Structures are given as structure tokens and as C-alpha cells.
Length: 412
Image (cartoon, rainbow, N blue to C red; front, side):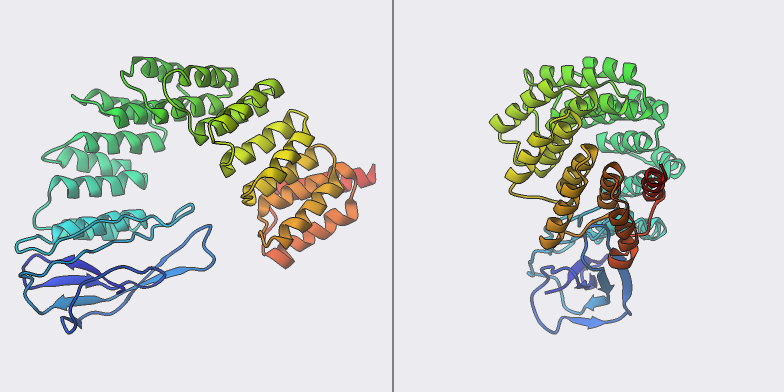
């Protein structure tokens, strides 16, 4: 069934939201229990990675029968795609006498926060007769995750009770806004700090460029997990401290197990340093640890080998890869462009299209660079026109820059 049942404030009334379209949700049992009492609400959810828009049409229902002795499972699917994938939040609700509506009202606040509909989240929150700590934290997170830190701190100060999650939400919110000092003021007020607290604070420092403070806090942290190490390594990359990132990787291996994010980051450090020897050692480590099959690691390996001067190794990694996403194809095309192999880049683009992989704006930057470096003026002009005509991709500043370089080579 395509329904999500929301328990109401009383035993006899239940609000049901019926999601029609892009998602299939399990619902309640029993026919004839529901009647439509409201119109549809169109919530368009979508983002990069969707083949078509996902539309949710919501209808309001009222349960006419008693909830007594009526148990069922409800799964709430949040369609809050901002950057990439569907965000799913499953939970099980048991219909029992006396179960309050605020449980699912809180879920609605989470959903509205994910969809950036903060005004709607506030309306649900304001109408809740009883607000428990989970509801306060959900509303707090809706503000903080959407960059509304003034509203978040106001709500934070109004909260009758706070837990670790409350503080962590604030630290993470300030971190995302680049306000490391404000994040630290919240961090210092915590009587008990968990791993999330420390990681969020370290992230706040690295994002703001306070690497010395991040290192100090990192060393002070009693227990570190892979997220902690990855946060520090990523911070080193962002600050162009590439050798420090590699040193942290070596230290990490003696304390915990690196994951694909770690390997991807340190391969990027090798690419920036042009360190083929170190990059090759990390490649061997990735193979031995079973991480080399990750598409993220594959892309990073291709970029590393290409930037370190070994295009043959880059091609070898590419051809051995079982799963090639758009990032993998783009990395290989850009690598060939870097080495002046324009015809090879164009051939790879044709093969990419034959595999039904749709190019993006990054693909064409690589292709135009390949044409420019190889003096393929006619081919480059054709690709530039093809961007919008065949793929609906509007040229950006980088594409025009490639064309200026391409035509400039023709003039010279």
C-alpha cells in the first residue's frame, strides 16, 4: 500500500499521508477504515541522479475505527534529495492505545527540514501540544542543517532539556557555516562529549582553516574512530598540507582500519605532490585491503597515475574496473587530455556514449582540453556546439576558457 499513517492526538483520530508516485510504503491493514478529508499537496522531490522527478501527492485521511488491538508496521521514506540520493528514514510504529501523535509529527519535522521547508516544520512544531526532547532536537536540526543558526541558537536557549544530540547539532551547524569559534563555545559547555562531538568540532576547525587548533584537539581526543582520522586527513588536503595527510595515513594504519574515503583522500594527496612511488604503494595497500574495487578509489587511482605521469597505469586501472561511473570516465578523459592524447580521449568519449553513460559538464571540460592540447580545432568546436544541442548542457566559464585556448592555438 502507498500510505504513511500518522498517529493523532487521540485514540479515535489518525492522520494518514498517502504518498502516491515514486515510493512504495507499507501501510495499515483493513479496508473501509479511511475516508478522504483533504486535498492533495504536491511535494516535488528530486536532484542529481534522478532520471525523472519524484512527485509525492499527499492526502489527508481520518481513521473512523478504534485503534484498540490493531497492530501494524509503518515505514516512513523521506524524499529529501538535495545533492544526490534518496534519504530514507525507516521506523516501526506499533498502534497501541495511548500512543501520541507527536511521534510522527516529529518525523514530519524531520521530513520538512530535509526538504528545506522550514516554515512548514515550524508550523508542525508549534502545534504540538507536548514537545519531548526528540521533537526539540528535530526542530533544532531543521534550523541548523539549513544554515539558520540565529534561529537555532534561539531555540537551543529555549530548550527545557538538552542532551548530547542537542549540543552536537549546534556544533555541526556552526561547522557547516564556518563559525568555528561559535562551535567551540558550544563544545566547551558540554559536560560529557561523545565521539560525534569531538569529530564535529575537529571538522569545524578544519573547515575554517584552523589546522593547528584541529591538530591540538585531535591529539587531545581520547578515542578516535575512522571518521576522526578521515576528517583530519581531509582537512590537511583542503589546507594543502599533503605530506601531513600522508603522515596521518601511516599513523592511522597502526590505530584503526582505513576505509575507501581514507584511500581516496591520500591518493589525491599523492596526485598533488606528484609522488608516483607513494601512490603506487597506496594502490597495493588498496588491493590488499579489498578497497581497490570501490569506484571512488578507482577514480582516485586514475587521477593519481595520470597526474604523476603514468598514463599507461591509469588506463590499466580504468580497463580493469568492473564498475565505471561518470566520475571514472571523466577522470580517464581528463587524464588523456593532460597527456596530449586528444584522439584517444575522443575515442573514449564515443565508447562512453555506447555504454549509455550520459556526459556532464566535467566531461566536456576534459574533452575540450584534449582537443586544445592536441590542436583538434574542428573537433573541439563540434563538441562545444554539441553540449547544448545534444545534451542540454549550458556552457560555463571553464568551457569558454577552453574554447579561447583552443582558438588561440589556431591563431598562433
